[in-house]
Length: 489
Image (cartoon, rainbow, N blue to C red; front, side):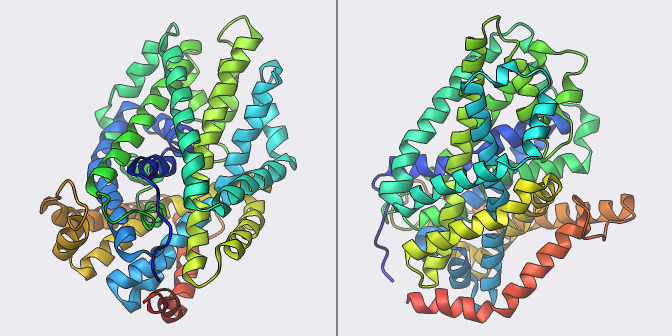
């Protein structure tokens, strides 16, 4: 099957893939994970894993997508052999499992943007009650539906007329808004205390395994490494496009956005709070919504004496958050759609099916916050396995062959050296095994009910759901390989 559609230019490809990477993970998730893991202490393993996990896997995803011209199921099958298409299916499941609740979060951002833009959010006395009333009602269903509808329309229009065209507008707008918020935040009185917290490490906290586990999962979360999303967009790369340079631009550009967002949020928090700042911003909640949807609106209301100015600031923040969520959600829906296309389903039928399934399977997260917390936990940690499976596929294909023929092949501007072989063959698998093993041993040691599959966040619930889907995928492995790899020849 010959590839028919491509991104029109290199800029279009980069801006669209940056839309994958720059999402609510950089704002909604990054800041609260930093707050829960010691501020500056968290940044050290976070940077280490950027270099040893995210960058190598982003390079791998670009290369695999460009080489195979198939979604993760067919691509992993083509690289690793017919017995391992189930690994590609697991990668698809992780991204799709995140998509089901991510659309709900996208809807939250849209709701809060409208609330801020109308001035209602600035007139709220108790933001915790306001959040609880919204979250416990049926409005999240409506906004979940709207988010899926918007994304379905964009994906339905295809790569150049849909994803590319909208990314060219949404991503620059997002970056402009974030930079404006950044400038305002660092000029607030007391902002320096937040910046100091954000960049000051504590050696005792660094030695905690949870900080390293969270640093790796957050890297995967906010760069898109191991999701299969970049692999899917890379299907639409032109042959002359460079892989390694594009991947590096995406990885470092994305993490720069995370740092800007972190400085902005911590500057704002510390500017208006001293004693209870850390207690507020690190509180647990529905996927830790406390920082973004409960505490920050309260702070926005204290920026000035003018409700109009405060509303404008809050509106800009939640509009940026919505744009970030939307561009990432687009890639998740495209991944699921492309998977069906690889099975012979037309784009029109595929996007209709994906949209309906996304809405239906997102309903539990829209109605029950504990369910959303569970799914964020299960598939967030599942990204470790996804990354390991990509590494495994490259090892089966031949690491040196992959580097020389696929990464450094036609269109390569920057050649990748043998250091890449070491990272993919040894370091990525070791990181995944050590952290998952560390996580399991600690869970068994400290949690008497670690095995219980019905807890929101423990080892048992993750293992149960992973094993369930992996078993199903192994049963249908040969069918998936035949439909995606053999039928594409």
